[in-house]
Image (cartoon, rainbow, N blue to C red):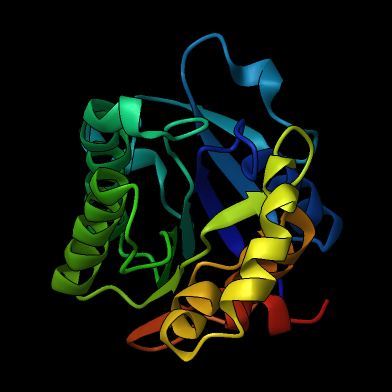
Length: 216
């Protein structure tokens, strides 16, 4: 059965690929964009103009969506962008939760990050606070926790694969290596589509291992 999906971050790294896949599978899709960015959206998607940081700018246009996918985030996150994690990632996540709650959507899908983690603590903290807001809202939600998503322009972590293999040999590092493993963009989109098409009751978590196991 086709879903009616509202997406924030539809012009980003994962957003465009997700929209194309959902449209191909017959879902109705609308995506939030800033003024002037409407043409950046893929075909098969209608644009909703608003500010991702302000729920009141678009909440009234979320209905009749039954599914809300929150993808807004700071591009190429690194420790130097700590202030943006709160100003963009956290603010947009909290706004998305508020808009979805106001609209009465059935299912909220959120891309978080693997946690706990020994690095990128400000980034992890912002995403953890978004997860807390989701739980407090009472929304049914699927939270996906990748660490790094490999894809076009995002391939340098392949150089770290030998280190992941080495870490997996040591019991003390094995769990962290698995939790902070790498997933491909294709795996991530497959997991997101599955989450959209299979809503849950309560809050469901997908760690790296679960993301990798989802099949098209």
